[in-house]
Amino acid sequence: MSCLFCKIASGEIPSAAIYQDERVYAFADINPKAPVHVLIVPREHIDSLAEATPEQNDLLGHLFWVAAEIARNKGLAKGYRVVVNTGEDGGQTVDHLHLHLLGARQLTWPPG
Ligand code: AMP
Ligand code: ZN
Image 1 (tube, rainbow, N blue to C red):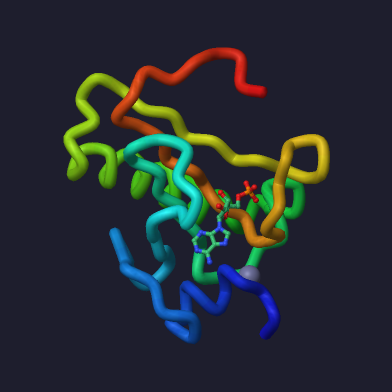
Image 2 (cartoon, rainbow, N blue to C red; image 1 turned 30 degrees about the horizontal axis):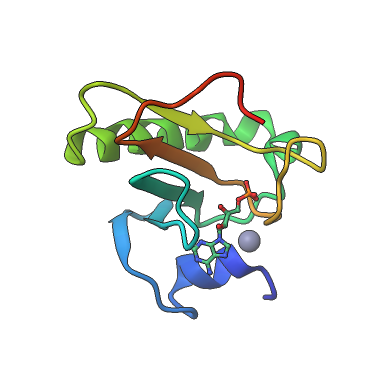
């Protein structure tokens, strides 16, 4: 297994869990772009959103619920952003599907 986020989700590479259950692992981004910057990954390896299948719809929905649950736990009542960078043009640098949860500051639009 060579995938960085598979290794983090399995505990092979240590990290501080922010949320975890049998399907999902969430941890702090090493290079935060906002005061709250959490990565939420499925334990199952999926290269990117572009490779997700209808059989994974429930898992994808669960990832978004986890993002909202972490936002609640972090007190982000004023709002936040959930981002899924996908592929080269989307700026994806780690080829394991992940949600970015960004918050605790005013975010600008459009993103770069
Ligand atoms: P993306 O560019 O959407 O693929 O996001 C990958 C994210 O993973 C970036 O925000 C990186 O800062 C983050 N990242 C890379 N390596 C690690 C790591 N070892 N632990 C935590 N976050 C990481
Ligand atoms: Zn992986």
